[in-house]
Image (cartoon, rainbow, N blue to C red):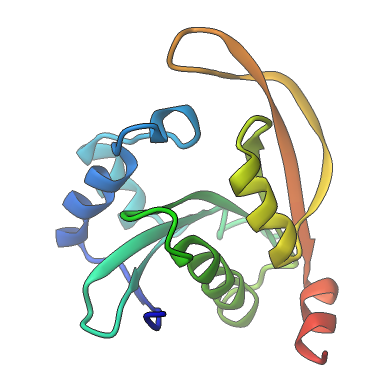
Length: 166
């Protein structure tokens, strides 16, 4: 399998990010920002955009972390997506992002929310060490206008650190 490295996104990566978050079927599970929103977020100290790339430095996915400016260290994995699903890149990208968050930021608690029906993502999050904390009832509006539950999941720095010593 291809190796994956992370780098900070640059403004010229916005096209890749937007194309990836707009792939067929992704509208049910991840959000979308406009180009102006991405530009604003990238300029904000609250956000960190990371690009996962292969050995040839070709982008294969992205992660958006949010709330980096929170004093309490509760950092959100706002969005994660790969350009080519079903190849194992998502798991590698998530593990690299978790590693980045705990090594390079003041994160104490890394959290995310996930659409209840997104079983594939829930499984990846669970294998990575995220724990389900609870349900946000009817919190997401699906593309067809229906509502569905979101699950909140998190990982604490001590839990991550314990996995590092295994």
